[in-house]
Image (cartoon, rainbow, N blue to C red):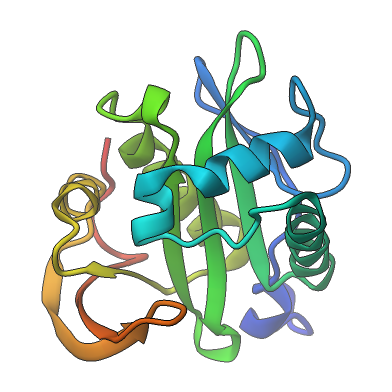
Length: 199
């Protein structure tokens, strides 16, 4: 880091493709080309029962899916959100999503989240993607602390958090509200850039 460059200057997410051998993490946005079309893939993911339950995607129709892609492009353009489509490296099909976003850019605090389609579940993909995005954020954007929150009833997400090196730190009471729902309690997991590497 030069004398004129501050940590805040480095704390910007720039589009990248992360290669995990059998899986690629590719930037979401209008330029992403998925087999069968990116918008249909998003609307299908939005309709999945587990995604709708734990990670409402709000891309239930083509217009909403296109708006989602526009938000992803904006997040990449201003460096505040790094949203990746998790795709099969062999055929390019969509497997899921992993995203890293600033919650306090100046302080180096970010949050990570993910969802997977049914065909990708139970294969360790969410764990691998979370580890990869975490490493990438720390090394390329000077992320200092990464938090991961999930509904207290989402046992699968809790397992991913722990396997990805995010220890449980506590329960946040009435911290998240799904659309048209009540506030739910969430588990808070977090890791620091200085924590031992995972995987």
